[in-house]
Length: 543
Image (cartoon, rainbow, N blue to C red; front, side):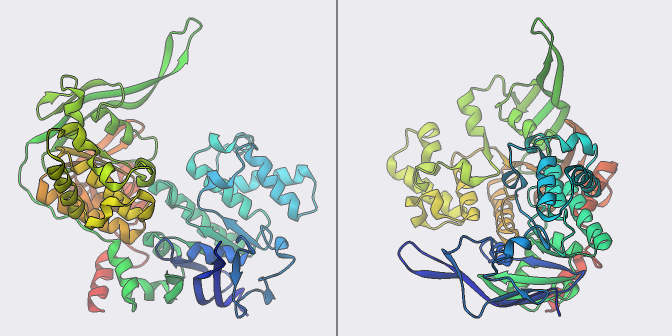
């Protein structure tokens, strides 16, 4: 008997108008004891909602299941089970995607772990606390006593995710469901979380359902893989079969999408931006008289050069100073040192002209676009500032042209941001930046919030725009695969300093710094689980 058996699972929701729509259709799969099952697919494919239905975490009665649907754990039916709470956190643990939203901000993390233990075990608070401290140690958190008494906001993203894992395994569940546990994390932290899950599988013998749209994550740890699209399973099989001998066209597209490559050329170029001895610091300690005695150096004496028509990738963990560096180049934060654009110091360039020369595409397109404005108004806003003497006809012509350039149809101009997908919103953000014809485009994690196929489309779009416009990119990212797709040169940052700078080819093939090596290794770029990317692509072409 499988540990978990799902048969003919069909689920959907009732609308306010009394209609029904199905989001998962006739899904069937098993989970064996001690197995890691990877579930991949785009947003909206039904991955998370299938996992939530296992523990009855959907908004019933608005949500519904078909009469044929069945979810059995060790032969016990879980659908419509009155004792489902006994399984939640006990027999089946759940690690949610965003730990900051899942942890109670008003309670210390230790108390939250202890509460979960006491709910399922008849032991004293003292023993529960000792068990919670041991769990924090098991999941790789240092200074367990200190972190036990910390609030969620006082921990890093990786530490919060480890706390979520500690809560999920507190009662030694048979199954651990991890829903996108590494999506918002730096590549090195993500690798540590995956290593933690692998270790838990070995030491505790638990089965794991790992949900992700990141194929490199799934390929690294999964024994078997399910591929979902539009609420259906389009393919399932062993990890090697899925990644090296895929049969479904959608599966092949997913795998190809994770391998966008850069076209290099050796043409010498002038410098579009020259950064010299840049320092950005913030006061953190003051004496009795209010004088600053200690600073936090977000960017510490950094010097970089961005070539015309090329891409400079800046990589590193969160807090390394990448985004602060970009903000200084755009003159959006106070800094010491000099930044030259086109040979002119930006301190001497009028602010209006600098905004035309340097544009930014932010990480989250939904929050960076005004929800009350149409796409026409959002994209055309820059024209009102920098091309205000042009006629309305020419402005509209420019808007349609740039929307077409980023792959959006003409009727998109009269819609609002919420009417578009994440990838389409990012295209709108790129169009808004391009319409003023900048010399430098700062790309701050433009693909980190997107599915792998959508991210690949955006990267290919950026490659095409750079080829046709000759624009320079300052590309900020912790995703080494995205950097490999765009960057000509790469600067590796840590703790506000540049540890290594070289051509992208040399960085990936011959990294010098140990930290750079760890980033590339954690990204799992050079090799897959058993074979390299070349083997993957070769098999895909043959298929």
